[in-house]
Image (tube, rainbow over all chains, first blue to last red; front, side):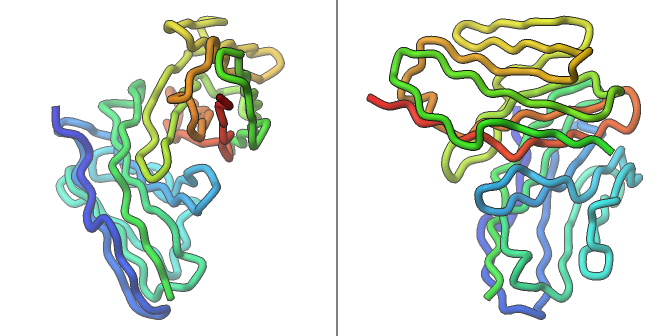
Length: 113
Length: 113
């Protein structure tokens, strides 16, 4: 079974620039998560989708971060404008349903300089 | 919302000895407790999980215990091996409510030769 795909793997941008990350979950998985993992810390939930609807985005800095999951499949996470403290690995995860294991993608390592 | 505390942040054990990592959670509605292992530069991967209708679960050298009354759960690794060296994250989720999975800050486990 194909895993969660994310791209790009690495991205370096200057502060105040914008960036977008893409995630393709495992086929058939209804739940999709975006997590931010700062070096040395645990994943922090940014947003959770159930199909194409947002379940929880309480931790998403909405003044600069946005995410969408059109058609309930792929998802994009955007940061505009980026700040130095946004440097982290952005992990996408998906699960079949509300009772299932979350499978993680390889992540996108973002460096803001 | 849910808050997960994890201890210790770093743990060193002699190869062959046992390792124990402990977590507490705050939301009594949480009923799903997965443990993830993250090797350096790689994605978190599920190693074992437990649901609130059981108190203990074992899979070869790995076991997890859950005390719902005290709201804590623990990971036990016996006969540790060098490949057990990694960062371990506990997590908690009220799967039958809003489903989000909240992670602890992680424990870096070092297996000493």
